[in-house]
Image (cartoon, rainbow, N blue to C red):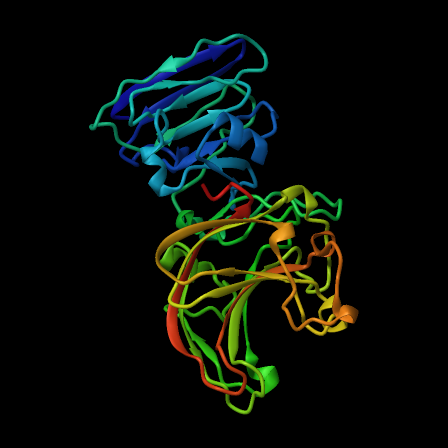
Length: 356
C-alpha cells in the first residue's frame, strides 16, 4: 500500500481507497472501473450518464456486477479520472484534474470530496466495505469480454453507447443476447467480395479480439462482382438479439449516431428480418460519406429512406418499430462491375446524441 487516498464513513458502510503497486491481496480493482458497492443500489445506464459523466455502462465479466467504465481516453474529462463508485456510500476517485468529485449517497448527506491532482498517483485502486459480503473484486483483464445490460424483456431497443475505443465487444441493445457484431458478403448472390481482418473473427471470441486490437472494428474490403448481377457488397452489423428475425421497437432511441472512418461511402441500413424479402430488399438507409478522419454523424429514424427504385408495393411504414438489426454496407457503384477496395473503422454506435 503506497499511499492512503481517503476514508469515507456512512453509518456502518465505509470505503477505503488507496494506491497500490499491485502486490496487495486480491481485492485489486482495475483503475478504469467505477464499480458498484455492496449496498444493493442499482447501477444503470442512466446512473452512469447522470452521476458518472463520460463513463460507459457494462456488466463486469467476472463478477456480474454492473459498472460505469471510463474509456482509456476519458482521462481528459474535467474533474474525473479513474476510481471506484458506490452509489449508496460515496465516490472516492482519483482525479487527474484535481476537481471536486460528487458523492452520491441515498442514506445520508455526505459533502463532495476534493481530491488534489498529483502526477505521482498510481493505480490500481482497492475498495473495501464493512458489509458482511466479500469486497467486489476484479483483476486486470481484457475488457473485450464485457457484456451489455440485462434483457429488459419488453421488446424494445434500448440502444446505449457502444464505444469501441473502450474495447467493448457488444452493442447494448436492451437484450443481453443482442449486440454481437457479425459480417456478411455477396456470396449468396454469387459475388466474390470479401473482408480482410487484422485478427481472426471466425473463432469463439467473434469480433472481441479484433475490437481490442483496433479499439473499434476495422478492416479492409475488396468488392469483386464475380457473377453477381448486382453491385458487389460486403457489410457488418449487429442484431437486437441473437435471432436474425426478432424485431423490436426502437422508437425510444429516436435514431442512431455513429463515429467512423471509411475510404468510400457507407450505407447504414435498417435490417428488418423476414420483412426484407417482402419489401424486395428496399431497406431504409442513410449514407455515411467517405471520410479519412474520424467523423461523427447523427440520424433520426425519419431520415432513413427507402431507395428510389422501391415500388409502392415495397413501401414500409414506421420501420423503426420493427427493427431487427443495423448494418454498415460497403458497395460498388455499378451493377455487375467490380467496386475496388479500401479500409474502414467503426468506432462508436449509439442512440442519437450519444456519440458526442
